[in-house]
Every structure is written in C-alpha cells, then in structure tokens.
Amino acid sequence: MKAIILLGPPGAGKGTLAESLVHDGYRHVSTGDILRDALKKGNALADEIRSYMESGSLVPDELIIRIIKELLSEADRDTLFMFDGFPRTLAQAECLDAIIDEVEGAISHVIMMQCDDEIIVKRLSGRRVCRQCGAVFHVDNKPPKVDGVCDHDGGEVYQRADDNEETIRNRLSVYSEQTKPLTSFYEEKGLLHPVDVSGGIQDTIDRARACLKG
Ligand code: AMP
Image (cartoon, rainbow, N blue to C red; front, side):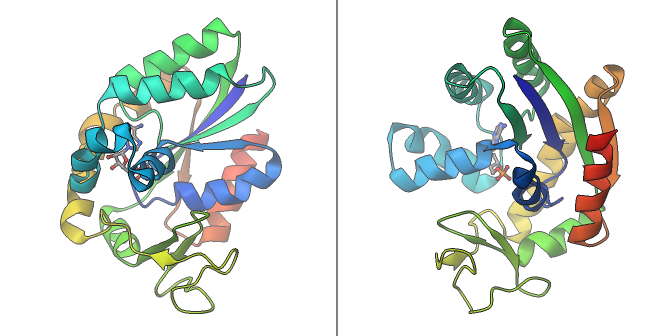
C-alpha cells in the first residue's frame, strides 16, 4: 500500500485538488465525506459525531482510527491512497504509520497546502458542494452552470452547515492547535512538500503534480 496525504487548513482546496488527482490513479479517502455520509444515513455513528461536526471540532481519534482501520483492512496491497482530511492529530498520524508499517507500505508525499486565513474565510463562506458526488463549487469563482444543480450528476448543490463564518473560524483554530503540529512530524521524516495555494485552482494542481513527480 502506498499513500499520499493532502494536509492543510479547511478551505485550502484539498477536495478540489483530490478531484483532479483521482485521474492519476489514486483512491481518494476523505474522512469528512465518510462522516457526512454517515450523518446523511442517520446510522448509529451519526448521533456520535453530529455535535462535533456542526461546531467544527474534531471527532474523537478512536472513532476515526476505527473507520480508517476498517477501510484499509479491505484494501488491495497495491492500492495508491490519497488521504484528504486525515490524519488531523498526532495520534492519528502515528496510528497511520503503524498500519502502513504492518503491511510494509509507505507514505510517499505529504502535500502541505498553505493559505492565508482571510482567503480561507472568503473561500469557505462562498463554497457550495454537490450532495451526491461531493463536487466543489463557489458562488463567485466556480458557480454551477445551473443554480443549485451539479454540473456532473445533476445532484443538489448546497452549503455545508459548517461553512458559516463562526464555525469556519473555529475550524481554523482547531487546525492550528491540533493539525498544524503534523507539519514538523512529516518534515522530520523528509516527506513534507509545501505548496502555495493562494493562486487559482489550476496553479495549485500544477504545483502539487510537480511535487508528486519529484
Ligand atoms: P472536512 O470535510 O475534512 O473539512 O471535515 C469536516 C468535519 O469532519 C471536521 O470539521 C471534523 O468535525 C470532522 N473530521 C473530518 N476528518 C476528521 C479527522 N481526521 N479527525 C477528526 N475529525 C474529522
């Protein structure tokens, strides 16, 4: 098993970059999408996670680790994973290392997406997402062709409950307290590739692809 990690604050464009890199053969794993799917289904997991997600706090590590272990246990040895929104704490990163070591796999690159907080607030408050396929739109920069309707599959394009300014600011502080320490964790392993994502979408994709080739 090989893996790359997309690391960066909420709104840095991890999902948008992932949509593009999927065409290079990666299997995209977004813990945020998995959790939102559970909320939509209203299964047992939904009650456990709702309050964390709505306030922009992190869901407890044990739960995320359980989800990831289950997913990876079913994976083929030569799957190329692209983790988006995972790991988000040191405990999650250490656990991922242990799982990968066990199957003699490797993390090849950690793409660290860097962006100014104020740009993020602007991006996230205008972000809209397809309820069906998760495609990402923006009211100003990338509106769907038909208002409220996904260009790809006709799904409903909606605003996530946690994309309001108060929750966005909370998510940014959660990120800097709990997830940013992962930067030095991966830097020490020589895996960190910083990418400036304050430019356009295509510029970010080009920069990330150049890192992945290196
Ligand atoms: P995202 O779509 O990645 O921005 O995630 C949305 C929300 O899901 C986060 O604000 C957290 O509440 C939760 N979440 C997603 N991934 C994780 C993770 N790896 N660890 C803890 N909570 C997570």
